[in-house]
Length: 110
Image 1 (cartoon, rainbow, N blue to C red):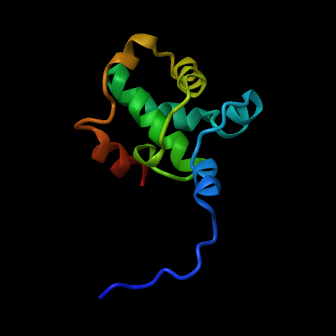
Image 2: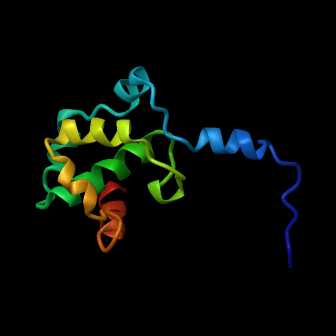
């Protein structure tokens, strides 16, 4: 049985804009600055790429409110802002934080 969705509230362009991570410096500082408690939780991860993956998940779940697997592109400015806060180097960018640890990140954030 197929259920009709009815009238769409957003156009595809509006939906895409809603699901993107803004690159504006003010927005980065407003929505993606971690608290001391956030950093303590993030730093419980041993490897740098796990800290980065967990931090990215935590940040995008807060704003715009989607798991990062649903976001089309993550801007470099966002990643570098996160890296600076967690004290990681850009070498962790070459490693895939999505792999095995994605479910454990989600479980820990819940």
